[in-house]
Image (cartoon, rainbow, N blue to C red; front, top):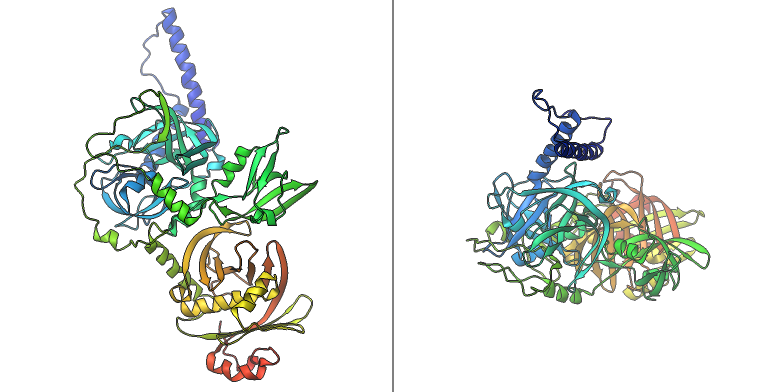
Length: 631
């Protein structure tokens, strides 16, 4: 295709629209005046018009292969979806996947049908991640930046309205974005559409879960809700899509196989008459309160987005997963504060599971659609659930059962186990490395910025840390717990010990361990992989960079209502085996300790035991010349 490099595609399309409107007016005027044209040969199409039309055709051709037609086995309904990776992961709606349970059938425009398994669900945001099986080279969509979308932009919806794609050829509708950053109040008790996209491209029952593309065929959002003329269930030109940026925020959580929740600031806000956003109430147990947010404080930015109204705040917060730590800018008593706030969960786990069960739509009838009971209403906002289709499929295929495991709190625990394996494999390929069942001792030496010598000794039998003339040697878990509660630099000890034992034992033997998903590190992207492990009264979190998998930070929570001890590991390069060059301990937004590393020795237990008694009184590790060097 020859591109008109000086004229952006969207601009060409807008120009063509104006040309068409102008031509229509001319034709109408000529018809009214009785004018005629002399026959001068075939009508010549403007090159700009022809090029724009060809661009649209090619955008549809690019987008069509990644669109998924979803069918519930046994004739229980269906909907649409969109592939987002070559290994078969696809996004759809929670209300599309829920009638199917753990298994569905999916068709692509190439005419092939694939078995698919549920992976993770976000019942609040009405998203589900499924995986089509049988290939590792699926066509997939390019993800756009939905924050760059504007009202008036051209867009298209491709999907399976009324499950008409019995030949697996999805329907394409074309329109514009009627609005952006829309907020839709929760439907029933759970579903909430925040910061969503509104379009007049025709959306009908069965389009749910399908893609909303921009004019270039890039994925802008996941179709979810629409307004219907109630008696005939006919689209009235108002449809909504979950923004792809919201889906990006939750992708790591969805890959964890969990049933995930959304975030809350731990405070309520109201729009002030002067046009600002003010805190109207706040929980004293929230991290926002610990960061100084108070009643009547003015909130200016959340996660890099400026907020002007209470609606803006909800639009931002409702698109973020629980547990994320984001930047917040606020003004209080004349001072402007930029800080980090760890977001709370909207629901407790039991509450979420109970509400989710209540929000799951029942399978549609197998023969005829359910007759509407609300005949007196002309229009109603509702989830665009699909109609029933017959399906002779019965038992769940073996290929699906091989990648599915049921567990409370999870849509598919098998997916989480795979992520845990990836984590421990990458951890054991880093420095300091370790093999399963190979118990080692760490001896770390260095100095603080003030020149004080630091000795750290971490083994199964002994934990100690000496900074200058200050020795710390906790003997019990209670001692470690108190060091974190006291915001001591000794919070590094339980972090290092947990790291060492995870290398040795692995996730299954360390304690209750799960892959949590992805989240910012100190409010910064790219999103880091997060693994959470329970170690007695501690909760330990490992945050790793997505590109090179190095552990960058280990958080130790002693009390959920207090700041964790954060051990930051700074390395000399991005290579997987790069050695740490310094360690830092932080609490909240405060850095309280940092040391450069002179040596990090890995001792086998026999050598460590021989030197343990000799150095116990001094609180120092075994001499370096006795160490087994690694890395």
